Image 1: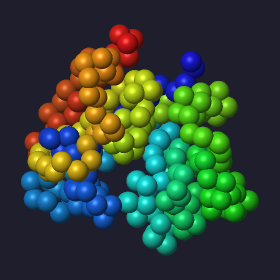
Image 2: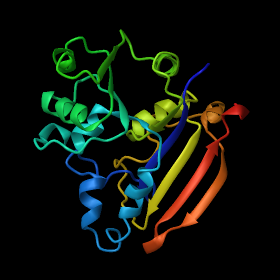
Image 3: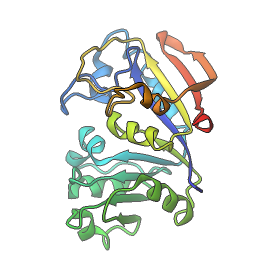
Length: 233
């Protein structure tokens, strides 16, 4: 299948957590900048983030969690485009207005025919809506490549969606910035969540990695890059 080459790019704690805890009010971007021993080197993640692909995939829940639905002041224009999957929806009109004002293009993916984005399409020419009757990540990635000419895609979504993409063999590379922090908590989201395997017959669902690069950053942060060995499946 022709699809974008994908990289899962995330900031995580040493114990693999991508959130501060099990509540949507807790968020890495808002919380970790307050922690002594972490805040001093956190800027490195955001600097490296600026070097990633010009198309980034995320979810409406993550966007709402970082506060785009409350942002009234419009940002400076970015050359980056987002693919946002939002079914509930988690995004409101304010959030969509902010994203369209900020991004080069917003491609909103939904199975919700009543999503508020449909009412805003004429207002924002850089808003594209991909509506599906049911969510099929394989078809979505094929459409992104064939219809929207997206050849490289950075993934920055939550643990459950990351797990779905991993099981569907839709992640090619993993690029992680590890913060010098232990978070803990059984219910706190990790890099890959989703359902656990329960039998030996499910071992084929695990994904081995090949290390490409490992860098020691300042202030005890670490950068690692892996290639997922999907071809061994």
